[in-house]
Image (cartoon, rainbow, N blue to C red; front, side, top):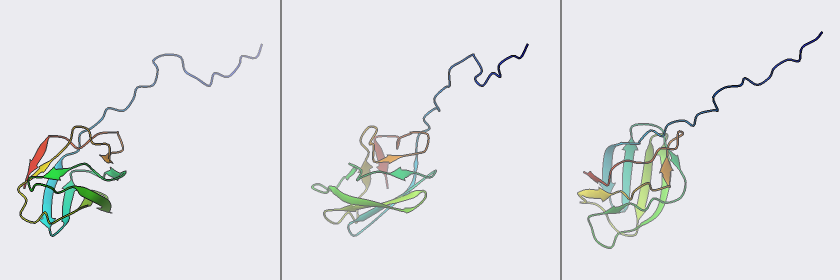
Length: 108
């Protein structure tokens, strides 16, 4: 008697990967651009809704300048900013495990 070859192991269903948070290591604000460096590679999808403590400044575009770095361009100068406000689970910056930038603000 020939037994069929088992291609699937019964048992526990596959577990999703745990989301790991993304931390900001450094932030540099020069002219209209805020450059953020993270503790790990990130995926950029769209423009983050980050704001600064300088009123009336909104992000208009963003580019990933390195695997772990994003440059966000604002509608006016952000030079001299002291704080970056991070919305809860902003979908624009994620990591490979699905994690988000953590915290609600970053002090420069």
